[in-house]
Length: 433
Ligand code: GDP
Ligand code: IMO
Ligand code: MG
View 1: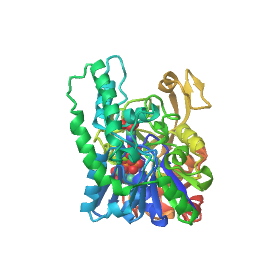
View 2 (view 1 turned 30 degrees about the horizontal axis):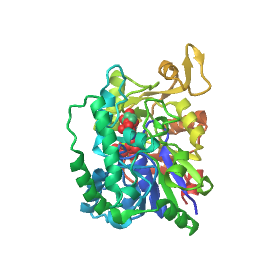
View 3 (view 1 turned 180 degrees about the vertical axis):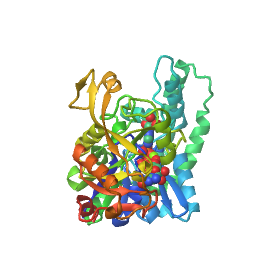
View 4 (view 1 turned 90 degrees about the vertical axis):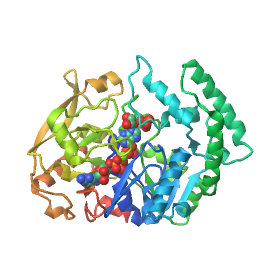
């Protein structure tokens, strides 16, 4: 009867896709609650590689997949993703439910983002350029168009024309050269609406009824806690609530229905885009992690910035989300390192910090304090048994768990489903059943 949230404990790309795919076998429904096609969740099933952007990863196991009200949807991107999955033999249309309260992304959202990122004297956030932020701006500004109105043949034109007028004024004010054919976009979106209409429903109602009937729901977070609009390294964040609380508002489920929260964290850390990154490793060592971990963005292909494990960060993200247990992924990537530094504390101006700083200046001024742990220098890739791990790898995991004050219930040793160690009789096994 357990409903569980699985989410990123760092800056995204922690391996949530693999973990959700693995756990979803034990659940009836998998639901996304925030973000959009800025997410890229990679799942390997044998030779086949899937990158899920908007559609919850559980769809690959034949589970019901729900896109909640907190997600922003680019219908063109959704249809493309559906077609790719259909070609691979997955019956997406039969399995997918889309919230009638989710907001719609339009091409002019991407245009607004391009202009905003390129503005003079502004430090670019290094977004995925998918129009995510501007769509959430329209949502909070109460101008946006929701799925229910998007598929309403009578309403859509009026609402769209109002929004388009707004964007035209904005384009003029910012001297945008690019011609935007608003009428063509409207026609195209009217076609998209026909395709998507059968899947649009009251997703909150669906989820609550299912939970009442004893069905188990797995909530799949996108991005990561440090990219959360409130709790992350603001302003270098995404525009949604990627933390556990976001699952309730973004899916329309009460907190009292949630039985557990599982964080996903790499055995090191990465970040895509700009912003503070205390343990970032430049030069050769950074390149070595990037190569071993194949750290290139699943959505944009950008090289990911790489760094050493950050204990204060996990302690913080665990506090914000209340992790019952943590999955450590990509342990195998550290197989070739003779020595592994771990950040155990933050200092600013020589003074140790007790809390995660909020000001961007302090975040950028963090001096990480490292302890060096000996590497294990032997392969863990593909291991499935905790006892078989080298002693030093076990010591590394115990160190992270002890210092961050988290329970580690699962360790991932490769991208495939079965390249995983689940600790028997742990808090995690109790949650996923
Ligand atoms: P997500 O956005 O959190 O789902 O993560 P991404 O899919 O963007 O990035 C994680 C990458 O690491 C993907 O290419 C996965 O296939 C890969 N991966 C996941 N777990 C492991 C692991 O334990 N070891 C290795 N070597 N790769 C992994
Ligand atoms: P998954 O779900 C890593 C980053 C972008 C940029 C910032 C804002 O695969 O872990 P946005 O386009 O959201 O406005 O960009 O957030 N970002 C991610 N980084 N993984 C993701 O998703 C991300 N989604 C957004 O690189 O720094
Ligand atoms: Mg990703």
